[in-house]
View (cartoon, rainbow over the protein chains, first blue to last red):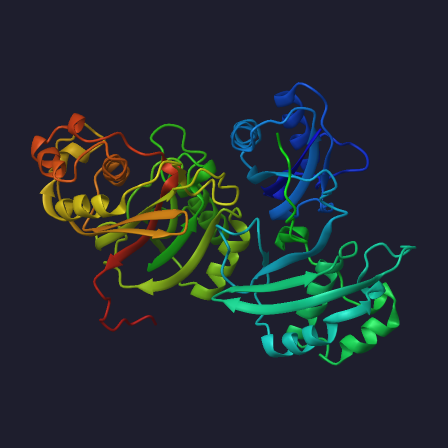
Length: 255
Length: 255
């Protein structure tokens, strides 16, 4: 068996997410597994670094899978890109050692939440940004972001209210930036809970609108109660930008 | 009657263009006239700076129209943006003197043709860029572009082969630029013939691929024959970026 690591981009607009519990027809996972199975002639199971919700995009999702045959990466990638729909694209494909697993080996991720912060219509970015016409105070948002960075129990920011596993995560950095009308909230951490980035973004936006004080983040974290944080912002503004792994440095025998 | 000048953006992907000769239901003009007529309660006719073909986009199309009532621009603009589909947006609206006409008063236009010059899939820009995996030599494209600038008979670059009016136009500048995988061909001129920008782009691309020599542009112009130039590139890569007017400086009595 040959193990592969794939970097995948997708426009999540018309999908039920990476994986769906019920009807699995219209998921990115299904599209990819179908393409791989048809190209190789046998069923293929893929593993992503994590599920993305319905409507969430990816510029650099990572996927691993095993094939019985060792197919050349460049050719397989080109074939997949011909076969996949236009809104899913393979950006890179490489051989990896057998023990590499896109989810289990991941050491961190970067998500970006994009806001169209203008009263004007966002004709060309409407599927990838959340429109918010009211001015945002980025300074107070940055003050809040600092308080959220680090290792905390993020239960207040977890969408699954009866989540039984640990809700402790480490957020390495939250960068709040503006480029013209686009405000980007970029979160890098060791892992994120269900809807965590969208709830963090919604809470930071409430700070930026003056509806919450920046210091409030401390008590929101301490509450360990979903009701203490703001609502989740819509999926369309969220993009999984990158997944991190320990460098794979050991020599492989691919013959 | 009050005359208005509007700046309009649209994603042309799902439209038959600005105006269609036959079935006019699915045009940008129809969408805009319908919205204006419903909001004002009486039929409104709009004039664009020029028609854009099916699938062509606009970041700054200009439209003029007259209304019987003098409605406040900010309110009318906000109402229109609520009423129009998400892929059409009003960016600016202002009062103009009665003799302003979006097409007749225009002194120039800038169109940009965008190429995704990479073998990788263009998941997020696929509707706005033309994918071309082969490397382009921008130096030779720039040499060709210089020969095309200026006042010439552009009959070889006119899509309507039996066009009876003058095919002489002045192209002020053609800028050929690369930003990562995106190559932009930006054309500014006093006016452009049917499909002229897409045929110019196609011909420049053939130069960039080494299929034509840059000096050839002289003989292509001299031929005054559509067959001398290359085919038109697809509509989806083309965007009307801006329309120019003489400054409207005279004082108006709006009371």
